[in-house]
Amino acid sequence: MSIDLEFQTSDGSSSDPADLLELNTIEQRYENLASPRRLVILGELGAGKTVTLNQLVLDLLARRSALSDSGRYDTPVPVRVGPSGWDGKQPFSEWMAIRLTTEYQVPRSVTAALMRKGYVLPVLDGLDEMDSDDTDPVHARSALELLSTTAPWSSRPLIVSCRTSAFYRLRESGGMPLVDAKIYVLKSLDPSNIWVQLENYRQRFDLPSTRWETVLDNIAEESDGSLARTLRTPLMLGLAADLLRSGDQEAVSSITVPAAPEEIERSLLSSWIRVAVGGIDESDRARSYGAAAVEGWLGNLAAHLDREQTAGRDGQEITLDQFWRLAGRGKCLAVHTAFILAVSLIVAGVLSLFPTASGFEWKLVMTFVLIFAPMGLVLYGLDSGLRIHAPGFRGVSERFAWKVPGHRRWRRGLQSASVIGGCALAFFAVITAIAWLLTPEAAVREVAAAYLLLSSLAVAFGIIAGLIVGFTTTFEERVALGRNERRPIREGQVAALLSGAAAFIIFGSAGAVAAPVVIGNNASAIQSGVQCAVWMAFVVWFVVGFNGQRFLAASLICRVNGKFCGRPAQFCNWARTAGILRVEGAGYRFRHAMLQEWLVSKARES
Image (cartoon, rainbow, N blue to C red; front, side, top):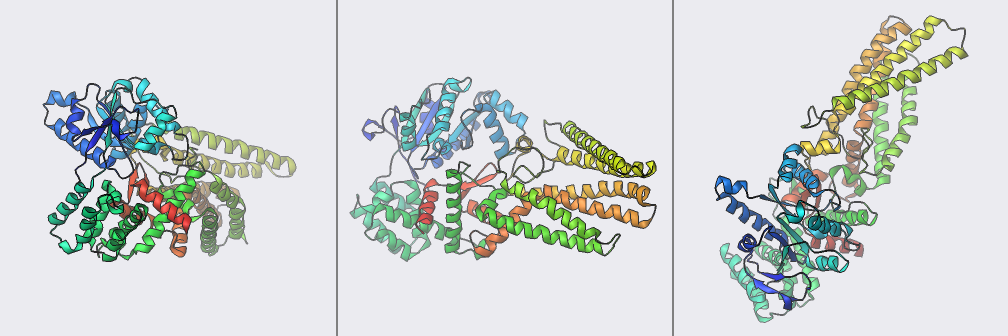
């Protein structure tokens, strides 16, 4: 729905509308601002700040494209990004370069150069989203201070949006204004404008007037009534228009009966989900979604993000490899453990078809359980944002890459191979020496053969560690490659399978060569080496693919208890296309804070 918005100007010292001057346009006014053209746009929830910024960006891009080549060279390109995730202390150019790489898949070296040379006009949408509503706005305050006092951004063009109440709360808490910035405040829609917008919308789609009469008459007759007051923001007006177009007479009646604005607002927010579900095409994979189920899933997601924020973690967004937190840590641990035990028993059963020594496979199974079950507990105990470089221990799905622009990783892989292999050689040498001292009757040839076997395993450990660490990408390297919100789980499983395959080949080769020397040159010795390789491949797959397995466990739990959709990736993508969620970096977040807050309050009530 296209809505004509009006603005008012302010000096930022008062939120009193009496101090504001009417303004009808924004793009031309921005162009007329004195250099360096810095602008703050304020508005309450649903007032249309994001829509306004989007339109401003489009208008500025259109104006720029009409310039000559020299004119375009001197005019920065406006780019809208959300500032959540920035702590206000990290250098702004560095943070923006990372966001541009993440959002637009542009190499980090390119985005860093664009920011350094001032070729980008940052449009920061949602300064209020840098901090939660019930905490001191330290991040937003630091951001304003940095952008006002630190070169070069203290004198560069900039556009920022913020919730009006949050902006003045920020000022009252000691935050400094954005230096040299003009402040525009979005006006609420008046009843006559609301009536005209709805009538124009009806005529544009040639909809029957009978469906709209009740609402239009209510607005015309009660210009200060609950319905007219509720529809003063573009979000609420747009939801009302979509509701009327859907033809849901029961829902229309719920917003026209005498009620407080808060009740009408809740009805419109609830209708948002019903209209979105009602618009699913029969050929869509989401056709099985029901409105009640979707509302429940979104409510659980909103409540989970609220709990995460209360616990001091990032409660703004969720990535696919963090959905296990929503399903429940204890439940995921139980299902994940059962899954790994089942797989290990299957592997042991297959290997037992080719026995080498009595109980050999089952001893390996018990070893796996006793050693790696505690490792699983440790992995579940690690907080997911840790930047530990050991694959499998970082709380995020792994990603392999052959080449990363601007990064040389062979040295990192070589160092890891040297350290792991060297430590293993030294450890096995100590173990062998102790065994020889305890059994002096053992022949030198037997001790040397045993150490040869252990040395081959140590070299194999070093090689596989070097390959995994070398090809696994760090957070910064993923930023350089560009991140996709739908791919982390798939990328993690591919990395796990490749790591397992490499471990099988390397350990199998080492075992096949060393085992005949120790045990004797026969098929049984080679078979033992291959079996060890299978188990080592299984262990490597388990560690590298840990987060992907945890996601599968969470999906299974949600499929059974209905707490969330059993296909989280598919649902989040649908919710994004339906305008309910949006993507920031590689995570999903609610598009409108008003919907999220309503879902949280409803979850608390139930």
